[in-house]
Length: 69
Image (tube, rainbow, N blue to C red; front, side):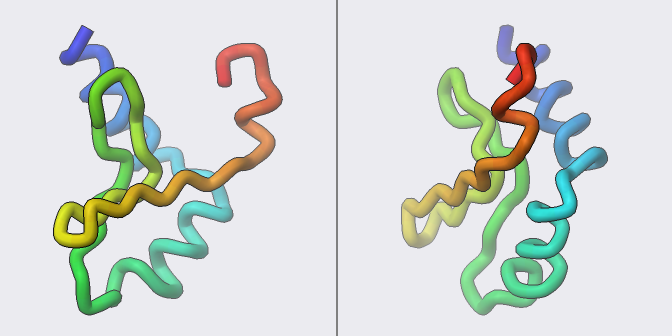
């Protein structure tokens, strides 16, 4: 299952929502504390994660209203 999660996280990074891209490119990418995108964390894939602050950021979007979401 871990390999599937990693592959899914890579797919999500390459196909980010417009909200995720906006947050990443306009703020988090250059933030002084490092954030990572689409991080596998247990059974979840976090949109953004900062290990130094132990902070996860999850953006809700229309994909959560789809059957696969």
